[in-house]
Image (cartoon, rainbow, N blue to C red; front, side, top):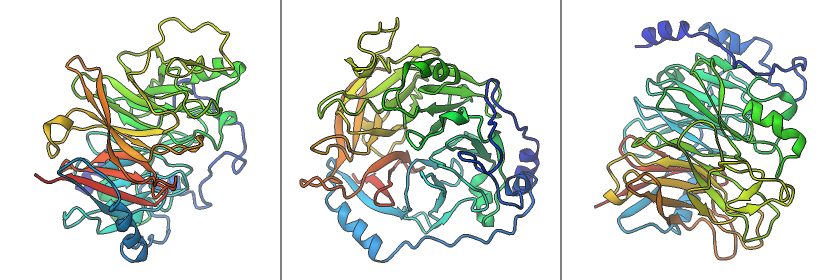
Length: 431
């Protein structure tokens, strides 16, 4: 099996986006990730070892795990559902479940990624270890799988791929890796920022790689709009899986940290976090639906829903702006989303959308820290939205955890990541 993957992976071509802007900064300068002196990325691309020590597992039992389980006792779910601790994963953000063995790959907003393995299939992780420890990651938040088992990782300003990641990760720190978009070419290096840099990705029905690109500002200055529209910041881009034929798919998006495709009609849905500093009760967050390339979703002219931003209140709205399918609670921070395609949950949930709300920071009374569910109408548009799981926010306004992403295990149960508690939870249904 591994020999076949080695042969296939070695034939992959490294390609870069057609209008990418290469960084002019020297190696090692601010904003640029450089490899170790041994050239680890280049060595791993040639299937050579690096000498990096095997990473140590993350402990899965003890005081921390016990505390997480006690917190889960406060989580409220619909009748028939239960929630359990699936894994202790530091800084857990977005997740990708391997299509072959069900290994869960977890990104972070820091410099590490993790693999979560349930070897005995009792639906509790047996092992959590850092993934590809020989690589210098920089905000490896966005993770997604192609149907044939290639793992894509979207960092702050680079895209890389790991063929057969579910099998090669067992080898320790060294994992075969290829660049899809080299460091400094995903966005202009001048636009790198600590703000809004958690990318997300999906492979679309057209087999292209889709990536949501935020922008550094609460509301961007007008002189930045032309650049952002051209390179796809403040929007969603797509490209071939080898990085070729990059194009801007959607614009007018402030900072999407959750995208997924409806398998029924192939439309792209995404969450969007809206403008801060406009008060507790405005503007709303958004759940959007893109039905074709080239659509504009209104930002920065709208701060969320139909609420105009102060900075652009006198500017004309572009023609054909697409309104959100769902206006969500202001500042609840809708992040990861998922179309539920499993069969474990009751019929009501099949084909609907789960969204993780990270919870507010820009509000005098906190809101969020929960998972919502949105059902769809027969025509494919949004119907009703309701709270599905809540309890991580206490009555005193303290966060016991903050959900980031939702993913589905191969058995149809739902995973929820939590970067505050450093955990992944599993929700399942018992008849």
